[in-house]
Amino acid sequence: MATSTAQALILTEDKDLERCLRSVLESDGFEPITADRVGIAMERLNSATPELILADLDIAGGDPIEFIARFGKSGESGRVVVFVSEQSMEKVAGAIAIGVPQYLKKPVDVDEVRLALEQARQHRRLVEELRSLREQTPVGAFPTVYGSSPEIQSVLKIAGQVAPTGANVTLIGESGSGKRLIGRLLHRNSARSKRRFMHFSCEGLGRDLLEAELFGTRDASGRLGMCEGGTLFIDEITQLPLDLQDKLATLLNARSGGSHRGPSPTEPTGVRIVAASSTSIEEALDQGRFSRALYDRLKGVVVAVPALRDRESDIPVLADHFIRAAARRHEKTLRGLTPEALSMLMKYSWPGNVRELEAIIENAVQAATGTVLDIDDLPALPEYAEARGYSLIPGAPIQDIEREAILQTLDMAGGSTTRAARILNMSVRKIQYKLKEYRLEALSAVRSETVRSVATATPVPRKNTEFVAGSDHRQRRR
Image 1 (tube, rainbow, N blue to C red):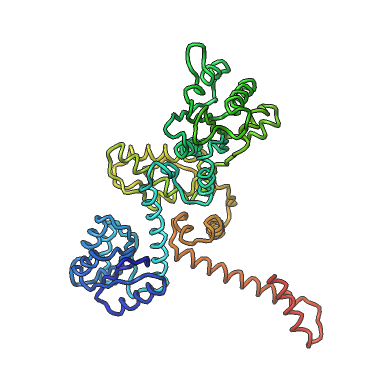
Image 2 (image 1 turned 120 degrees about the horizontal axis):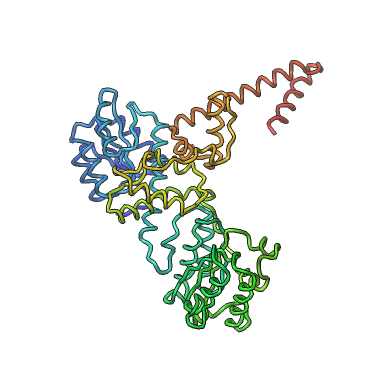
């Protein structure tokens, strides 16, 4: 029977371990499924789809490594955690060789198991997101814009609302941030989708060539005429000369009958303009570099497209998409990135945005010789502190630098120790240990300060001493 509860398969003949894992799984919202032999575990997969496999490498009934390998080949989306005794540590190498991300020593630590479950949840969410994106159809969806961050989802929501209206749209965002892709989905999800979509950049072209390309000549149609009934994406529109901006505004006004609403979405006539700029159009207007008439035609719907560094949680999804696409083009088999390589990508500030990420992945896939991209396959990128603008004082003690890096990364990661651990290439347990250490240091400092304050304070009657100290303590806590 189908269930919405995430399932986890426990493979062990150790009853104590089974009881411990079952208890943790149930308290964390998993439905545990048990097997004490590899053969039984394989049978369980015929009727269940576990998100997590917890396998005891000490099991006597079959080879758990073979089972894990078969589980991975079946295309299941589950994570695997293995458990091993001190006497069987040599088996860990076999598990790591087939891609098992982590192992836990027996007897198990409950907190470590809980951390493994949290990582499994995150993995599950990412896999579901990727599956959803791959299954989207071209019409009525957003198949070319990847990401689940609030920043990009806000853009997609606005685009979805305005696409069917036929209104002209202006996109503001850094070079390489994906403005052209947003323009394409606006076209695809409109009544103009069966007509032509064209891209035209004003960057680096002289006035006469711009006029001929955009408006046409006596002998040839320009882009505006070629896109009749369709959509024209005009990139870097602030670089269009002022007189041509006015000419474009006049043409758009005439074709819409003087109305600023644009052509009817059900009867696509004329051309829909999706304008884009990497700089502020309002600033260009204030400086006299942009036509007021054209500004009035385009200001109705203005969408800010976020830079990649402002939607960094989308980097794993984008990297996965680019790796798969490049691997298909170059006929290679690549499973993705190593944790170290992903950490490197997460640390970089991406001045070239999504376009730069795509180019780096493309070159890395071309040169790759293994089945995953590792740090050695990627070009040298600035380190996290330099790229994010953090200042670590040269000559500072190494423990202070480590503390600063952990706290700053946690802040950037929204308090997620798992994500901070991935970025810093540290274990989650170490980060949690360090945070506990920092809290103890802070508590010790407060106590020392309190003692020092009481020792140097002006004596007061004994009956008021407790009240005064308590008042000072409450003020400090505030």
